[in-house]
Image (cartoon, rainbow, N blue to C red):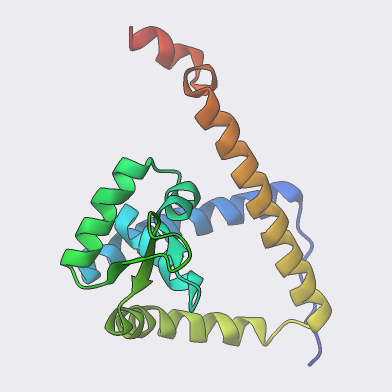
Length: 171
């Protein structure tokens, strides 16, 4: 598998492309959530539950990953259970803790919705060398770490992170 020649790009062009991808992803997640009868927050949490695979995620970890309070996660879990996507089960090592397990039908439903796009992404990856894919993977991992760190910063002091003009108007 040979890499194809790539056009030169500046960091600004890469950021603009990333911004467009993120915007499209947000719109897409909204559309997918509607198709599945969920809201975007519930779909995001379902994604974390599905990603946990055979090692069910705890409700507390789900809250942390989604940036929600434990009370908000309780509402999410109630809705996911009602919709048939997940259920709670006691943690076998600590019965005070709750683990969240995806319903097998939910896994199949999510796979049916996402699989066509993932297939296309894999076709896109096929045009890259293993070394290029390693760079992409490294970039996504490191960018994700930066995003998590930045989210922690703005969540710890939301008012300070708000632009000055907005703070004065909201008083």
